[in-house]
Image (tube, rainbow, N blue to C red; front, side):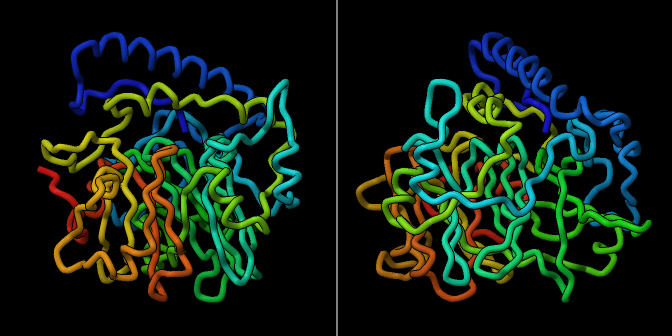
Length: 360
């Protein structure tokens, strides 16, 4: 996705011109990197500005079509990763780039356990790809990350007997990643929302297809490898190694400005809009835990949940990061786990979420 810049959605504080200048520099830096990503494509699809140039069918469209926006990148401007060779912990720790280590202990990873296998997906890699089409424990999965929403979601990508492969569409809805299902032979592709967990435009939307969300844990590499020494790590694309050590979103995550339209925005709150949230649940509803609600010595719990409940017992706030680790093997069967910024989760799920902590 394009690098974040200021958007008049509110949240501008004193000294905003300094933040805006920093974001402008970040945008310029990301544009330089993005140009390298798409330079090899002679005819990229999508002009970065007009949704209609991307060629996706928008009938039906299950979300307000006027709120679909182009990200500034063409279709596949960020290349989703496919099944990659796997590194052991020792190989991941030994990998270097330039004069430093490729993975450092404080790096965040998306940890997934499935079918007896354990795997870590470093966010420093996902920020440049956003989608990994992988197979874990014999199960086809898509592990996704959107830096604009700090949203991490893993899906089972086998739907109604068909194994899907997802790409990065270059389009957004509510500042959030829209994936597409890659099709060949003239077949029509559909758009899928990362945080709505379903197809929102095209044939799959007409068929009402949704994705199964899997439990994950976003932790530091140090914590994950200590808990799961048997974990594997997908080997990064060697052509991208120097880019993986750069974070074009550093200025964006350090302030409250949004780059793209979002609706509804959360009301005035004790929480900053980009406060990290972990949500547990599924189709019957979600319980969302802003990290500050879990950081206190006596965590603020939502009504009806006791500290001894399996959902609460599975959560572990860790100041380093900070992160909230989820012991996915301790969750009730079928419980999904999603991480996102407060503003993004509120926009997508304000109607089906019970919140922990006093927000107002």
